[in-house]
Image (cartoon, rainbow, N blue to C red; front, top):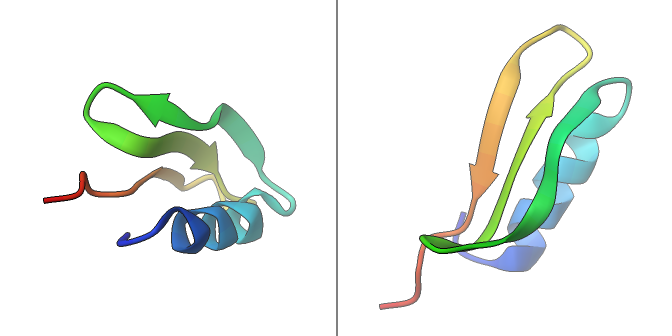
Length: 52
């Protein structure tokens, strides 16, 4: 993802009917990082790239 807003929209959509494994938050390699399992059991790692 390019922006925090894009990551938040994606994360919010995936968590509908799913389960948040790690909420979106800053981490050493990314301004936004989170893990969510969607309603079908597929796990996604959502993050934004570090600004150049």
